[in-house]
Length: 528
Image (cartoon, one colour):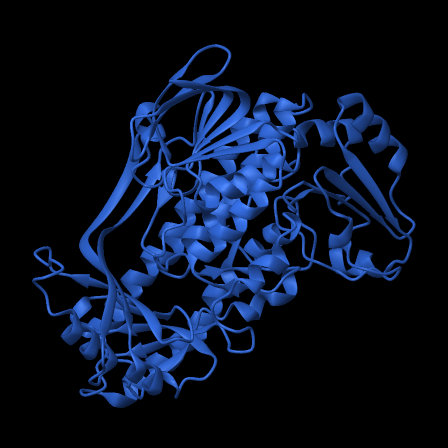
């Protein structure tokens, strides 16, 4: 048994979410231990689509350039998507998941690369942070909670070594079969669609030639009437003609007992050459932990929630968990955050995932099923085309309405709501509980250049009084940077003269004439 030093936070699982959380904590000098079972990232192309919001995280983590350099598809190639009816060679298709439509509301461009490339960049950044220790090749087996924290027991994945570590907090980032969640006896709400899915990774030169008709696209969604709303989903891994494919298969399907080549060709709509690199299976279901916190234990990423890989929501939702939880843990450990701050993690993030699953992913499956059951181009082509065109516009609306926010959160002053939802509207107006949109400053640079590890108070135009906030922040011991921008232009964009921004780039408070005292605003924003 090898006993580690005591840590502030122990993270079970060093995939993208665990590593993102470790960076959030390490940048704040929080003593952190990451326990990860795989010595090296696993070369399975999943979690590829990173949103503009996720790339903001990489920007603040100091590795945006490194991540973009790691992409397997050149930046001038395009990372858009396409939906086709029946097969990839069908005459009916439209652009899908057009994230460029919401680009003005974010500070960075989106990105696309396999998860193992993302993990490599994250691991390299973690290695640069003195306060973070990573132990690769170990899995957390169990933990015990006492009044002061958590004792974590881990075992070597391919050996007999053991390690034990103490932490004030434990965060389970150990996937959908989370040992941390099970040991903490946190129940899940499951929605099982009873579908066995296959993940194929393969090489095909002919598929590349066929898909050359869709320039600027690198992932492709096929709606087939036989599948009742479930997708046939292709994606390009690189420009060496490696691809991945997700699709439903019979429960009896096995790697050596199913004609995957014929299945691919049906989805493509033409014969293709195929050389398989990987065949794997997974169950299509929605699962959400009923609590994201149990005393000193937290859940993040797939340990807290999982869903089918539709729309690229999964890995991005997990990164947002890490960003939301990281600054809150650090605030409590540094003494300026109250316990209500930790409680707000569940309030904010649980609602966002529940909404993502119900209002976007499951809704899309049901709407696709209804469409396929009522429209057939061989029966009534005019009606089919009219509905197909309407769906094309709807695909744009899906991107526009996916705007996770925290209205009604216990730490967001002056708002009402459930505390977290994925349904919203993008706006440049500064709204409490919503992501801050970027804006160029008349004095130079962007408001995002002023954001950091603590809170930021922006005062625009001639309005706003800094002294009350400065004194209240000092009394609370919280980090607060005050930025004056005397030009009135930003008042018009943001619709206010004063904005308080949280460390996760969400608006904590925007002055709307309600006359609340600075001490009251700041205290609520940090759970005090």
